[in-house]
Length: 174
Image 1 (cartoon, rainbow, N blue to C red):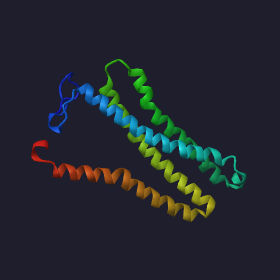
Image 2: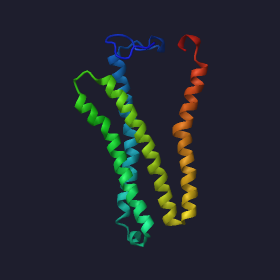
Image 3: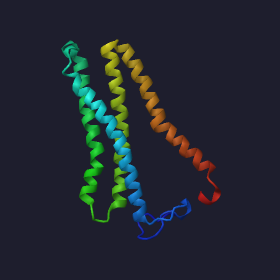
């Protein structure tokens, strides 16, 4: 089995990489940061969109449900931002304490939670836009389509690819 905390020992000698636990943790941390940058950019764009809505002339025409839903979306967008910043704060707290492997494990969990919340936010924004521009039935339909698409792309597809790769791995890597 792969060594997960050994110093100077390749974590998984069968993966073709010759790296220590520290090197692997550094590489994994860099990959997590890159993925956070992507999610953070999308979240910032959606947040900017949401923040601009309140200053539009038509905002006062929204019904009580739409205003409440809009405010919920703003809170979800803020939560997405906070979740995406949490790994950075964790890293700052654990900096130079030789806890990179643990930081990577925790950051991975936070990143997965961020992806889930971004999917909720994206679905909610689609619902809101369709509700304001068309009607509630169109909003429910569009949000359901987007939600199914996001579940397929963010959950089902990656798991399916991982499952296929596990089945097609050479026996020495199994």
